[in-house]
Length: 162
Image (cartoon, rainbow, N blue to C red; front, side):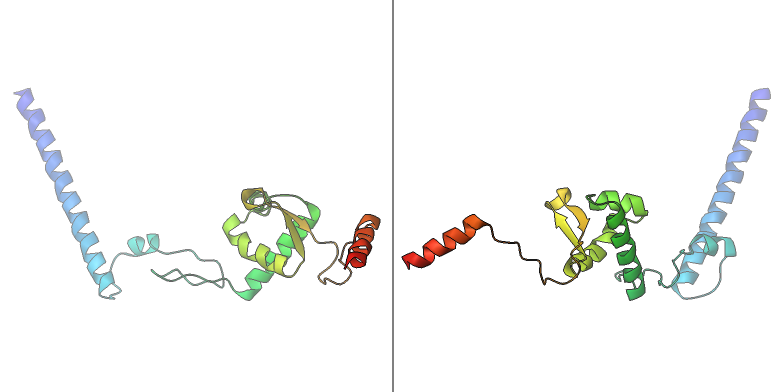
């Protein structure tokens, strides 16, 4: 008879588990329906686990919408990038992102803006691109290379032929 007793206990525990599991599934389905209908019902624990943490100044991401950075965020990223590149010239964007603890995706736009302002310059292409601080300032005035004597001589000889 001891085998019968163990089988009965196992069956009883399985039934308890199935009952508890079906109750949980029923509650989850009710919460999902209430949330879909815009109701405030549901347990606070389930709703708290679905909250989205967001940086100050940003809205939660809705499906199909992008969260855009504010101008202040972009300016802060630009300033941090410019300061880092001045202190650590010749690094790739991935290395700069690691140093600033920002994703490289978030640094692409500030880098493009600083290149457009001529505050940064770059050497290389694609993943081999290295960034340097542009010591010459933001203006293009006075940035022409001086012409060598050989270049001047070639210009003179081409003028004589013409």
